[in-house]
Image 1 (cartoon, rainbow, N blue to C red):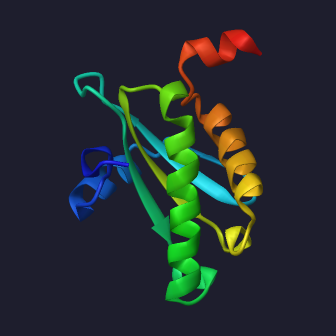
Image 2 (cartoon, helix red, strand yellow; image 1 turned 90 degrees about the horizontal axis):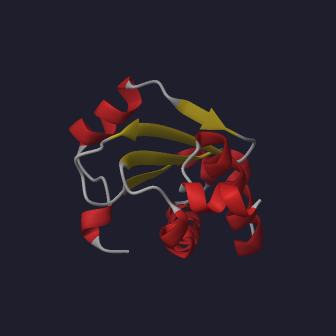
Length: 119
């Protein structure tokens, strides 16, 4: 995923947090902020130390990033969102990460209208 699709700065993370528009399941929490003026979505990923050591945290972030990349054509483009991994997300297999993220993205309404019409 290109860097233009990522939220990196602390101030940008805080802006999304301040919207208090969150959705969660047992593995992930997603905060969403609408930004109609931007050309594509941006995502921030946060994996805390409760997940494990640095290797496990990076492993989890890679899996989240890959899942988002696979969902990219289906996601709304006018949002910034944060994905926060809960401790239960540690060591999940890829298919489980993707399934859990899909669930929380549906709750958050992050899929474009085409996705919801198919179901």
